[in-house]
Length: 498
Image (cartoon, rainbow, N blue to C red; front, side, top):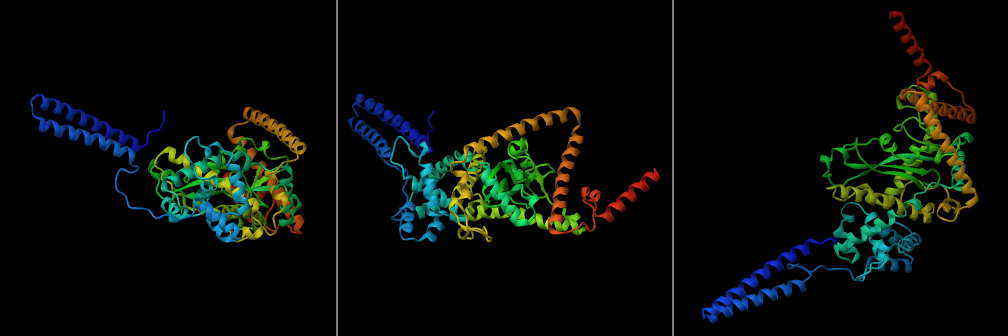
């Protein structure tokens, strides 16, 4: 059933009341005429005629009450972008839509194919104008991203601003599988080479991606569940978003959107498709860099605990070298929020589950637009959004993920990962039958620590270092040699006493 607006409902109510009123007047006129009171009958007919004319006036008016005129700019946002591009003023272009002209035109060309921008009726605004309005709102936070401010800048009505943004968000979300996609083999190799060059440890190269959580704060207190589920550890209302990014280009390759701020990183990460089937995404010996907020897993490598690092030179040294790679997750978060500051404070009113679902779509659309826009960001443009640059100019291999891939290589890689995934599932089923949940957790934790131990060993070999204050057994417990001796002595004393 078609949706009826509030104006339509109000108009229908007024029309019905007016018709009933006019009908009553005509009945009164007929009765007065029968009683030979022609003057009153004429007055009733005149009043009935005025009621019918009022209905005609109502249906011809766009607004139901007087309103002050709104001053609008002479050119639309899209026309202003065209003028800036012709003048070569790319700085002002970026200030409006937060991306290069080439990136904006690519996004417009892709979205123009979506039927949502080709309505059957009416004369819609151009796709350029509609996408420009959405990018303007993505690229501003606070009052700068409000509907009223955007309407004054863009030359469109406030209702059009809302509709343009919703259409663009809906169209961008449809591109999620194409844009926020897992890397191909060539892109993986580029990232692995970058890791090896960065840390100087050849055995560390298979960690080509990094994961971290980012909180998208809410500008207003949510109206759902009293807002408690949105309150994060910093006592701010937010959404918890998990992003897996390539460490060399910061491209987003996987995500988890939908968790509220009270959810921890480990809980949000547990909903990732990577957790459900790591062998489907990661080849033999590959892993993802993570921080201490994530659980132990064979496909995740995280640093030693902070308290342990304060007691051991070996732990601090490993954490130091690992941080030079894992910091790229922080850069990726800054890159996204620097381009689209709307993610610093989502301005939507979270008063219903539908509003919350739209907030998820809004965040996802911003991630998709960011991935598309970063194709045209050279190192100098990257500095415009975050403090540290890419340390080199982007080359074609950095964004081959959006162009045609070597089908033979990719087909073989996918087949290999499918085989590995099937083996992983069979192994999980076998362990579920043979071991308890606690035993399986121990196996998972031991596998993660063994991988970290191997990487720690390779770091020392590459840097010509030796373990100074830890042993193999103490590192598994994240204790120094001296702490392990004290712990074992206490355990022995307890056994003697008992």
